[in-house]
Image (cartoon, rainbow, N blue to C red):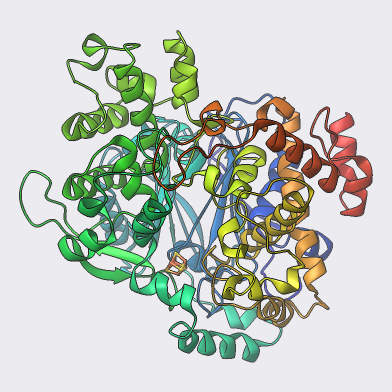
Length: 634
Ligand code: SF4
């Protein structure tokens, strides 16, 4: 095996109770060097189409990035992927924290889980071996207690624990995973897949530092040191450290594009009570970080007393959660939002889909499609704080209407009928994050074509490149993108999006956080390439990086085509084509013909057949994965 990777893949068959190791060969490693690429490759090869996401036959992959665990800021991410129970398509979620680096230090690049255990188990991994252990006593308990119990059982307080919560155990279709209690693989329902397999947790302990497997350690450690100093000098990384993502509240509200009341509006009247200024003043108690990251964008909060009391245990709400349980549900009580975040984190359920599903139900209630007889008497209207909190409980417990909502908005809308679909703000079954594409249309392209459904991390947002004098645009120059208006659609926007998606996809392959590399933040593009070169010893270029990113996306796209998805699935909710009613963006909506034409241009640029959205044989050959064309034709 080459440098930068042990090449070891752990295969766990839960039905048989077997754990065996496989070895990646060098050619496979070069084409799919980790994270998203390796996960999509393994899924496409090993998961037949038509397998139900919650059946024992679903395949679940955990994959470290090529740089996961390297001693430099933001190199902490790992990928979890499987067929999604929320979308029925390719499901994938990345998280930082500490578990991925620990797995890499234990000499394991990926874990492939198949089958279903008869009773709950957890998996423990260290450099001396692996074991499946009973977990019935951990089922139904808070993540903090589960983590402590596992550490006690293994006699090691430094074991890193990745686990599902009660939402995953109960198969809530947007259940996630957490590591170190504060870092979440939130999206696409990977926690429910683990729950369906009766696998509660994976505990990992590794001791071989990343640089031991690197071709040339010095440039990697030197970059790590430089980044630690640079964080204060680079405006985007410094802003993330000082304020974290919650500061987006005021920024997006002032721009008139803060998703409010289920994307009906772009300005929230309660912003002063739930924005960053209130957050910092009223609930902030500290800053947290991921493995080795100098940015420290994580917020720690506490609400000391009262009915919304929240301990510091599970981390503070990020922007998405703050606005999701805030203006998106019409709620202006910061302590109640903190409580909603805490409840979701204790049950380990995606805060974006949970909040969006409740906002959907609120709109259905106000439109008379559901009533108190459906909600157990709750007046489920926008702004009803306690009804929102009660609804989270119903969803994670799968009780009453919560059982229906636990399937997500697409499924719930189909069951409710009578036009409820127009209130389900989702793509491919996954609910939209808190970014309004009416104010940054490239994000809408990502929502539409993203293989996992609506995802705001498919590509750098248009706002970063709109000003040709900005730090972000200048840092993006090696990518060959243009500075374009946030509203511009057409060929040039499709080209920008395509390049930026390939770059972001590459970030998910190497395990760098979205907030690490330029143009979003402070690691220059040439430094990323040099670091991969130092880690692997490869003659590596930006062109190869973009091809790796594109290859990974094409594998996921091919997976979706095999699941039966097509052009009709690459769309946006109707609401986004309607103009915003008030605020700085009053009257602004997305032009449907222009948007649909841009999606067609994107297909052409990507080499996808517009009739099926399948990558063409020519494009797959150019990406050195012609075997995928054979698979699609078969
Ligand atoms: S920028 Fe934030 S989320 Fe990303 S690795 Fe650093 S601390 Fe973690």
